[in-house]
Image (tube, rainbow, N blue to C red; front, side):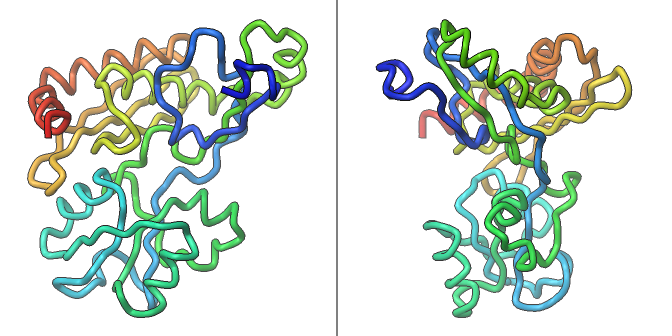
Length: 242
């Protein structure tokens, strides 16, 4: 609103939390180079997801993380964990949880990388759409600001982000949905992994597609259609209705 009312010239966002539909008057003018997109496992001792004891209490506020953790380890006791990073860390340190899952990028930016016990492989826990990406939003008609901000844009990050956001937009997902996507460039090819999950981890609809870096949004839509054809549509409709 501050942008539209011209009380600000730019807004800086964690793109993971920005809705897919922007007002027509606004645009993402640039994105910074992506930080580590993976999810981080934080535990009281060294180890990984496989080292947690049966029934371990794992805290997360994300249905996406919950679903994939339970798909990998159905025996875990996944519990809701909310609040800022400090609040979540205090609960881990107090012994309320055996482990918690947060974004690597956020912890690194806060100077808390040392708290990361293990980085979860995307094959086990596919990241949220645009996780680790910082975007700069401005008015589409503000040519001076657009020109100034353009020099900050990281091309490869923008290509990957556009594919991921297009995937989520076609599925009608939000940052709270059990939807995940991660794109990566390999030469002139763009590879996109996408997933829709049952919150209890009983079913993961997952696929991978490749396409040209010249039209990342088209690749996102293509993969979304394949995921829908594989049965994700009724799952998402049920979640939205619930």
